[in-house]
Image (cartoon, rainbow, N blue to C red):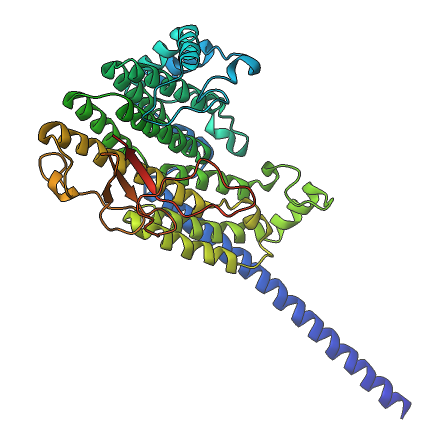
Length: 456
């Protein structure tokens, strides 16, 4: 009896060990399948990007950001201007508008004598920088000397002075307009668009956000000029052309391409993202090595390429369709398991970037139409009753609102002026309400439209 029990026990042990071996082999086979299928999907995704003619590595991205070999490079002139920019100390500059803490008077009011004298002095101090900005802004091609092959470690020092110098041009434009010099004011405004355009081909997200910011300053410059002085039809036509060209060069797609290259570089070498990505005191190198060995970095990369493909496709849709397309991609990201740690850590908020780009284009379109209205008023001696009256003599068609796909709105003002506007990201028609200068303390920012206002 004991012999039988011993034999039965041995048989059970043998069966159990067989089950363990079978489970282990199945696990190894499943892991091998996961690793091989993931690598295959990743390779197929990368091959598809290259087949479409886009860079994959950061080194390829650096080569992709180029200008014609014999072309003059605006970057060198603009960077020289940065070096000549003379900032006043905080105490002295606080009485300056735009570049200091002081506020410009309302659009139709003259500059106070003391403020105007300070502006004259500041512009004189920066005459050399300003002339270089004008010269650089007039050059068609631009490639700043940055090394994109460094991936996340890429430095973009050219951005640090960009907004300040466009503000300097705005200040110069306001001074010229105040003096009734429409020709010089127009030149200053156009140069603001030129400085913004110098970033148009830079495939870096922050660069494109700075471009949009500089573009917005240039539009505000035009608004200040139009409200402060009378421009000739020739000057208005010149401004319209530069505004139109700014929309043509507004292409967030390039930034998404650059973002994708940087993301791919992270999944290939996770240690490149920095020491704080995992947090909680987790040892970085061992954790990332295990993450990659388990195939999770490749799995993250496959999902990442799919998400970025969605963002890139959204960037090619008609403007008013982009936000919904981007929201769908973002929903897919949110539905992805939090186990994909690296994916969730490096994925940028591209939905917000898309909205910022659409707002920038809305600003450009409202400015273009407002300038066309000014041309109509010069010729007819009165404002048009509707935007369709501008077609075809002053605009080919009434531009669409980037946010809802309808035509831009237009309203006459009691002051004898007018407002052209887009409903903006809240999709609420607020009758051309201008964005408040600041959020009321303790309150939610009220609804507002994307506007171009001429008050006189």
